[in-house]
Image (cartoon, rainbow over all chains, first blue to last red; front, top):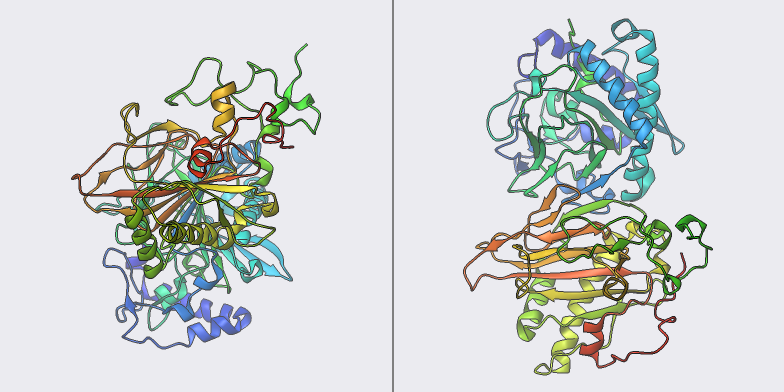
Length: 297
Length: 276
């Protein structure tokens, strides 16, 4: 099942779920954004970006700058590459757990969220996608602990780039492993299609599809098959820059830049390319993975 | 008995290094100029403590507004010489040029205009958008900046610019020791679309930066780097403003020559006084 052919019942369930979450957690900024009406003068999305509203509504538009998070970034239109970000022993543990999870879940991601309360960050997994029944108690416990530790480490890199750092009050994080069906596309970005990192509720489920970007997008390359090269590509009309995937390399980027991944499919079960992705938000944006349950059987 | 780096007294200055230890790391194998005796100074001597983010590379577009970029391009076109410059500041004030640099054919006004335009780039980076990179900004002694507008004349080992470190060249050439700047940056002042290639290449990262006008690449200066071959019609320019951030008074003979202040002294202790 992919985003493109999700049954209507799933969409309505996701919308109901989103509305329940929003009723409980939405911030004033979020309410403002979600009640904004599309203006046809807003910029259209990049023609290369793959974008699908599941509601079958009109062409998506990019929210204008006053509604975006650009003012929270120390720099826009850029990418930052940092190597050796996770201590070696911890990184090794993360890699082993990621591969173990991918084997059981057939590559589906494990999303987590980070909530902020009084400038303290709390990481929690989304139990709806994989329960301990799927992954087993031991793996679930280990994964939760390691993801919490890893995401906290990565936040230490993201917060100093943010003005003010406490603007980040929420993160969506997930692990992608291998060439899962969702990613398989043709064209230049054959490993992961061209896309924006954006609010997936607004992108997929809002009656008027709109694109609102997080404060930062970030990718931690966890496992990279030694004999294969993959690149995160930033589109020629945007940054026009490729970043090579290397284990324990963190890439932080302005998420308004269209990006994708090129590289050969990784198919060996014990040698799958895996990454941890974080979107850091100035409000508790809802992620597609938290709204739609995936069938792992 | 040799003294291991981690046993050195905490107030050991670079000047006090009398012996190269063979256990110290070798420079990268791609380095164009290296001798078997060359070594990288251990961390205790390096500027690691001043980097808020180590082992990083940043690519950022749109550093200058259109009018600011045009002004810098014009200031450079009027002079057509790079004018190496040293920029300093008091406390957290903006960086200002120290000395005028040598350009005999240029007027003081022309040089001043170029220095001001370069200062804008430097301050936009180190006092502005990327100030977060400096853990102890008050310990930045100066920033050296210069403009290159083409491949160096020869000896490039098949590259547009040979593989090198941005390091203290006095220590490199007198003692065979590599002590890196805090950060280095390349601002692409003018890259003609007809220039094909010329990527900034980091062999240790396996990573290239594609040149583009108004783009800046900022990196941990410990990374060796080169510029890959470029081809272009002779009229097509590739002009870059390069800078190194320093935490002590390095000797830059080119700047000193152009500023007319070069003079060797018997005791270089003061120049190399630096404490980890």
